[in-house]
Image (cartoon, rainbow, N blue to C red; front, side, top):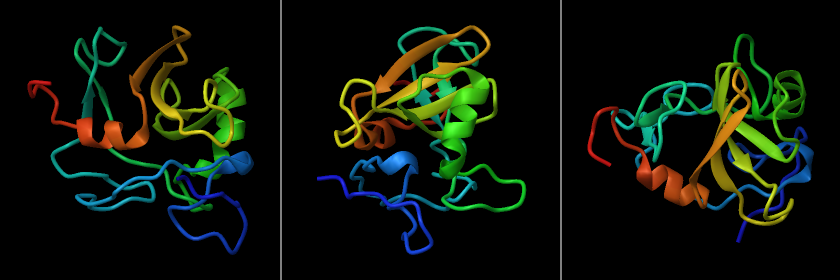
Length: 149
């Protein structure tokens, strides 16, 4: 069951997301660092079923946004602004990206208290691709670029 999220000064890292959404449950074994830094050493790509603007067979996942505000680092709390700025779907919490392409928790089908899928969004060509049905499946599916899926 997902934990209710509060984006305030009392929120604990790993338990907060913008707009009152619930974060998906996840076992974080194997994670090296987070909060805008590398996520899993040697597992920084997710295989795709079709080509994307990034590569013919994968999308990158080399960092995860932190929670809170830090100089020169994007934050989960900036999702509402970034979604509007880049014309992305409204019910998405971005977790990684560079402005032209993003990976986010997609709440469009499940609602604000459901378990979101994980999706790739390309702002330049206005396309998207569901990567995994949930965050745990996404993390378990991470691989190295060029590795067999």
